[in-house]
Length: 370
Image 1 (spheres, rainbow, N blue to C red):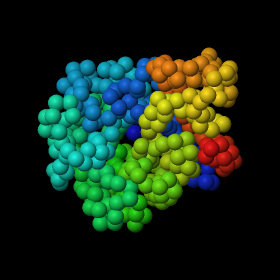
Image 2: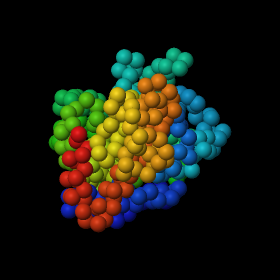
Image 3: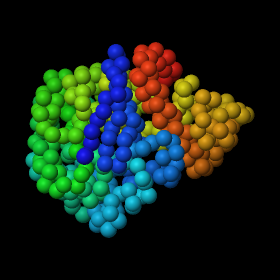
Image 4: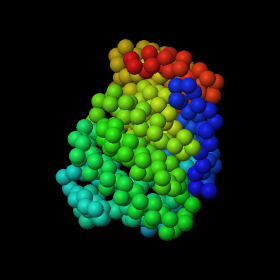
């Protein structure tokens, strides 16, 4: 078995609750995956990630192929043993990193040739090398190599990137099928912000035996409402019996809107990135803990939260740490934020199963939009 998706319930709004069955166990959905770019999450140990409730993390194929390199993963028997993580791992394909290096890469039908920022060596990332790298890493879910473009790209540019993404997806699938590792493979729907292209992309990819389908090419510069409308349009077209993954999204409000649209899986660096800027997510809204107003505040970040940080540390102390640029401050806020994101996913799942998602959506939208 690679991946099997069990739909446990669907709310009238379209929100779904399910179970993602994998070779390393089952994961309830909707699920948020913390981002372990370099096989670690900044300042946090794997056991702290697990204690937040996370059961699956995302690692970055592009960065891991450059350092430490596939020979290290081959020697260690994969990323799980290497980083001491007993949960699941999803690896991206490197497509977004190709997109983010426009000044130093050349994309052709074969793949993307780029220069390593570590040693300036020339590298080639193709659908075949991306799959081979992910197989060495040993992730539980692999992604096809795709062509990511600006969310505001015109129709012709978006179609060209989408068509190449489809060709690369089939090459990725063929490469995966040549070596049976038991890893799952997800395809990526592209098409920019053009509904007709998203429809075409779904139609081109879903007849093939992919284990799940991702919505890619969003959260890359387009307006928030365009993100939401494109997600709603695309998710509604995807098979009901396969997991749906919205890549690189997002804030708690983004997650709420996208779960309502019928998406099951998410990843984003926001919980830890925002913690470095002293921002904490709460069920009372976003809080910037470096503010002078919290200097004498003896209460927790969020009175509704039972994470170890909220049980032990005050807003006043965390403000002191962030004012002094102490690493402990961003570390503690990161732990809280990861707990918050996992708690949000649990609340949405429970509401779907109870048939109360619409009420939860109304209540949380008012709070999270602050």
